[in-house]
Length: 89
Ligand SMILES: [Zn+2]
Ligand SMILES: [Zn+2]
Image (tube, rainbow, N blue to C red; front, side, top):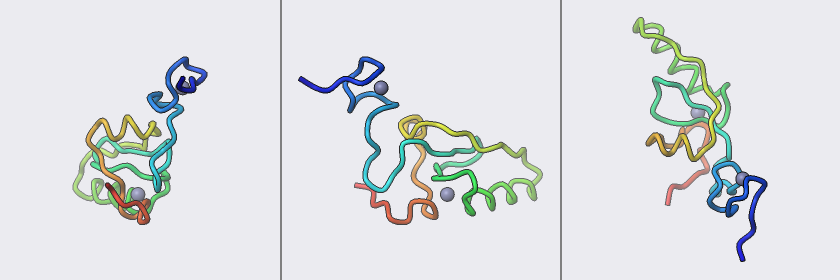
């Protein structure tokens, strides 16, 4: 029988409790205007993206902390700067 988590779900299927794939983390940061997720809200690439948006006169979105599964569900990929050691399968 599979192990169940505190949310009464099979651990591997629980968004909150499933272990992150190798090279990734369970919680990541996204911005509404970006297309990738970041390891930290202080990511250089994330900040540069925000400065770039500001220069273009676009609205600036504060980084949002989400679970990895949600970021991936939105079709985001890993930021190459934050997850330089991550090799997508
Ligand atoms: Zn859980
Ligand atoms: Zn990043």
